[in-house]
Amino acid sequence: MVHISLWYLPLLVLLPLTVLAIIAVWLRRVAHRQSIAEEEPDWSVPALGDEEGGISPLHRWDVRCKIVTILGFSFVIASLGHLGPALTAVGISLIVSVISKVSLARVLFRLLALTGFLGMLVVVMPFTVPTHSGDTLVIFGNTDWLCLNLRGLLLSATISARAVAIALLMEPLFSTAPLPVTLHGLCRLGVPEMASQSVLLSYRYVHVFRHEARRMSAGMQVRGFRKRTDIQTLRTVAYFLGMLFVRSFERTERVFEAMRARGYRGRFPEPVELRMRTMDILMASVWLVAAAVLITYDRILF
Amino acid sequence: MHISDGVLPVSVTIGGYIAGAALAAWSARRTESEELPKVAVVTAAFFVASLIHIPLGPTSAHLLMPGLAGALLGPVAFLAISLGLLLQTLLFQFGGLTALGANALMMGLPAVACGWIFQKFKGKTQVGHAIAGGVTGASGTAMAAIFLALLLATGGEDFFGVAKVALLAHVPVIIVEGVVSAFTIGFLFRVKPALLESSFVRHQKTVND
Image (cartoon, rainbow over all chains, first blue to last red; front, side, top):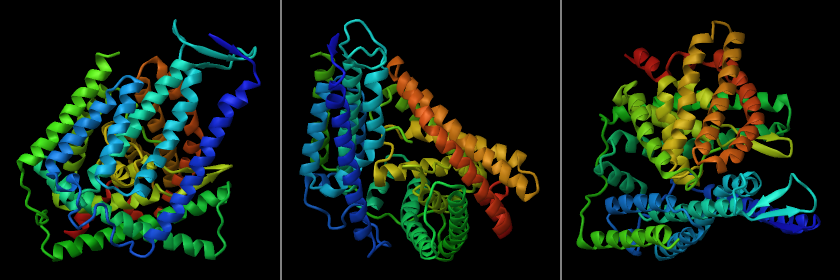
């Protein structure tokens, strides 16, 4: 148990939190501005994964092998129980990201998306974790109600490290092959073809409807609509949603009829022919060794 | 709010995957397999709608809409929501790949329940529809929040505090969601009542044939 006087509280807890929050908000704003600037010209051609075949080993890796290995590795990371191994996993994921030459902006964007949930954990857990014997408590001044449990802090840090390590693997997993190829790989692994087709279609139309929504909200702003915290805003947003649904459901019908007219009978042609080589198996075994090392580190060395 | 990677125990995430896959398969069988492209496109619409932020005092909240999805899609809502969550992970890293099954259960089960409630109690007037819509909208989010708290609590007593805070944080969202859903359903009742029939996808099929 550590007693420190109350005036340390702003210094040790509030100040770092505020700084982190300000950085997160600022980065989010920058990312938002960039995403708008980038997306506006070619909204209809979303690129998740580059088409040019790429140059890194992960681009050349067989997509089936890649999915199974990275998904399995993610579950191994999720099962780590200590901070050290989890941080090692973050290191491995960083190395993989560098090797696969993914775009830094998109990796940052993904990490920013985590800040909301993980921020809540980091703020709440140190103060709410039940006290066990052997825990280090930091008590500020003479307050009873404000007592920071270092075990909670450690736990939330471990969770954050696991989440970051897995999130860092997502860009190497999804953006090192075009989305249709990744989904084709999933089908060959036994996922129903319908599921992968649906993902492909939704992915395409998310961008179409986002464009539509942006157009509608531009129209609303031109007519003087500003978002506020009142019932009028809620009503307007509700009508906006209703209109979005009406328009998109009608478009759904047109899309489906157009597909039928072009001979759609529940199948798309295969995008590529997949072939497994020795290199693919070798890559998978390297990952397997890494996973085994992480588990050993986590379970035996602690 | 979606659960991130690395938060839940691995057994819970794997169990969530298995249960989620079974329910998605059940949900897919409720519609003609040839009509699944429609579900995909409708999912995209809900996805975009869930990106809209509503100001709440100094902060803002985005809608979760399990209630509306259930009311408009019926049992197919589970499939649509799983699909939407997969897309969110793919595109924005909301939620996470390992927690996908658990997140799908958390949002999808309330949606299916809400769809049933809405069809049962919507009545025939616009006011009746709007009230039923508001109730399903609010209760859908409330159920999802309770589910979230329960899932977090599977992590052991260390997570109880976080579960409580997460539950409390959803209270304003539940209210906003209820009001917006009521207005949206009322609007749809006037503009395109066909969308509010038992299941849009099935209904349209009978019209086409």
